[in-house]
Image 1 (cartoon, rainbow, N blue to C red):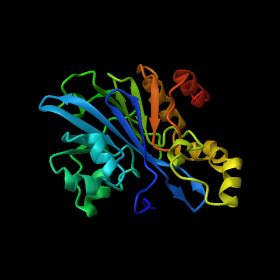
Image 2: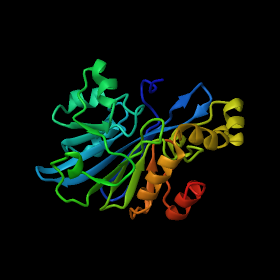
Image 3: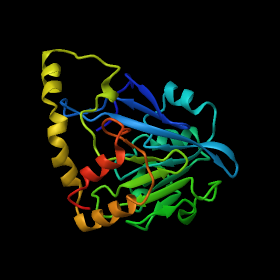
Length: 256
C-alpha cells in the first residue's frame, strides 16, 4: 500500500482558523476509494509560532503553502499504519519531534526514524505536557487519547482553540466525496461504483473489524465524549462539520 505518485487532485479545506487539511485520492484494490488527508494545526509554542502535522501525506507544494514558512514542532502518526510519509517529513524538518502510540518506534526503526514520544497510557484524556511535549504554550491547546482497543492503536488529537477533533481510522465517513472532488470520473465502471457507494457499504464492516476490544473502545470513546469538539476531521471520508455531536453519538451508539 502506498500513496499515488505523483500526488494529484489535492483539495485544501480550512475547517477552522489555523486548521488546514489537505485531502487527495487514495484507492486500494483498484476499487475502494478511501481518500487520504493530512491535517496541519498552526499554534503558538513556547519557542514561538509553529505547526503540528497529523498523518502527513508525501510532502508537496500544497503542504509548503499551507505551512507558510512555519517550523514544524511535532509530526504525529495517528495510528500504527498512518506513518508512510513520516520519514520524508522528518528529513525535511529534523528538529520536529515524532509522536505515536507505543510500538511505533520499533515499527519505524528500520526506516531510521526515531519516535521521540510514544504514548503508553490508553483510553483516557492526556495533555500534551503529560506526554512530554514540553513546547506547548497553553495546557488546553492539545489533548490526546490513545485507544488500546483499536487494532491500529488509534491516537486521537483534540485542538482546544479550534474545537476540532482529528482521527485516522477510529471514524470513517464514506463516500470520500471531498477527497475525490478535484478528479473526474474515468468511465462507466467508476460511475457505477460511485452510485453504489461500495465504501459506504463496507464502512460498518471495516470499522467493526478494527475494534479488537469493544470494552476498551467504549472506555476511550466515553473519554473522548468529554471533549468539547464541534468538528471531526478524519483521514478517510468527508469532514463532519454539521450536527457533529449527534453524528458522533450515532456512530458509537452501540457502545455509549
